[in-house]
Length: 505
Image 1 (cartoon, rainbow, N blue to C red):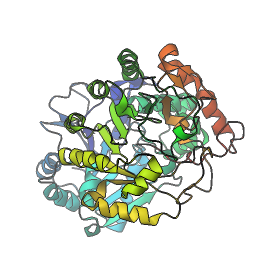
Image 2 (cartoon, rainbow, N blue to C red):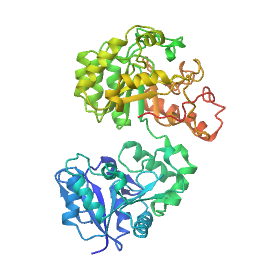
Image 3 (cartoon, one colour):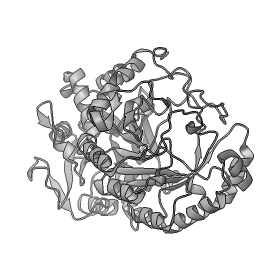
Image 4 (cartoon, rainbow, N blue to C red):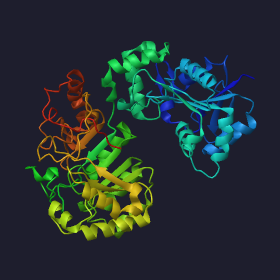
């Protein structure tokens, strides 16, 4: 028996892992890289009893489990696969894993007598996670009674229950990829598209597995960050009950209050998203109040039933009991609800938002919080020199302090007066994250360049008329211009924008 067991997680195989890239399926490429370590490590494939996307015989010893929990996996490893000094974990979708990093991380663990070795600043799916035998035994016990789904994140979360009790070593990437938020595990359509883009740029990555080569390609070709839409912001209506002076509606001149998205149009959009970007999130709404749609409950059900993720951002005025029960029944892992009282003082609320409705908003929010315990966020806007409001807001909602979501002030490219609490912009400007992943759709179907483009001055067309893929492709030029021009002088709105470094869920 070798001193190391390399555990390959195939409990939750996505169809993308079966896609062919450069001549072989993703899962096969992952096992090819794992097998290159066979002189140093024993290999073990962990599969679910119901998993049937992989061939029964994969050329690697395997076990099948009836559940997905971390406790079951860790316990079986401890009881039935004991005797190893080290356990290395990787995912079946990690076709960019560098075997050399496995060796390097193990050497670090041995040299530093560590219990846990992980990579910092690497894209996900490139660096391994390493546990000592001692750490594995402890985690098997700690995981009892917890419902963590097995994976690298679960191991990290379990250790985080008492993070100071561990001897931890981290190996830092020579390039900090945190800003790019890259996940190279092929677990989504977006990740598969990015993998194909990488191989199109540098086909040699198939046989040269060095992280150095991969990192160089990622640094030089930042354009691959844009693949398919990940966050689709849809205006259901073009109306709101409030007149907040810090809202873009206060400066827009093209409002059509009677405009609302039809159910037929929404059905077509949802089906197109399921085909083109199946892991996308639909966010309601970028400029208006989504619950004013005459069939808001039907819209919410349609999105939830589609399998897409939902983010609902509402002022809370129309969040009645029926809608609260509907949102409470939704899977909190696939839905987020953001309610925006913004203030805790009724007079301040009425002055800043144009209506004396804070008691109603708070009552509706309290009802929702009583029905749904996860992924309900209570939003407060942050103004310049306004700490007193935020302090009072935290005091008002102290029973739900972990759910409070401070909102960055947005001056909409200087269209409204600037009142930011603090300038959080990085010193070095990089291409806009929103142009890379976001798609904004107005209630009439028009698509602006981004959410800051209030008047649709740069538009590739109408999504209901021209189709989802066509309008997304039509914005590629703006993205490439941002990648090529660090000063961004050629694009309207970009120069005064301070939202380029922010990102959505």
